[in-house]
Length: 294
Image 1 (cartoon, one colour):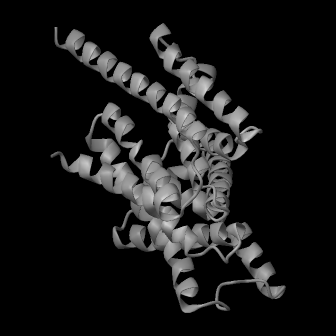
Image 2: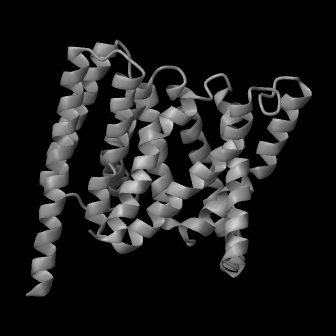
């Protein structure tokens, strides 16, 4: 099997089982976890870039346009992380998985609206079908699943911004975390002064896991980058369903979150939409390759 596929499986696999990690930190407020995640990610990445002697690649980052792009990306990513960790630690892993299941369809809509990409009529069927599933789940919940929508939209916007960004994933993550370093340290210093900080005042596993959050953040992102450069985009599109699938299974079978027959119907409609969408994308790509070969 292509080494890039293994990198992709590893990246999405790590993201899929991260709820276990965040659950172990359930006593720590989500905002404190996110700020530690940002700060320690930067520490890990700085060490990595230094060891690889690759600081030269950041030279082109210091212009107004690039800084604005990565400031927006950093803010949106931190909102996504905050919502995700909050959801996991409030017993909403199943709903967070819904957000990442519908994210690919949100990406398509964002591409149509902001990038002017033309969408074949056949692709509107799975999007409409997914909308039916989401509406059904909304009626079952009795309210709109805002957390799922928020995660899907924020991660979609992050991807859209990164598509326009000039730097590679390693340098981009360095700049994003660097931009948010001072606000993160300021918040951590403030809660320490208020006697509300968990780090250094909790059980040993908490004091170890908060710094390690930076490592488990950076490693799958680097694996993802390696995979994206070496395997077809359509393959990455299929692999991305591994992460929410694992989250979904963890939520139900490991953490015992309720999952009714009505929720199964709603999720099944969305899964059917994703199957149709993925099959259509593969067909279109093969057709394009055949046309190119001719």
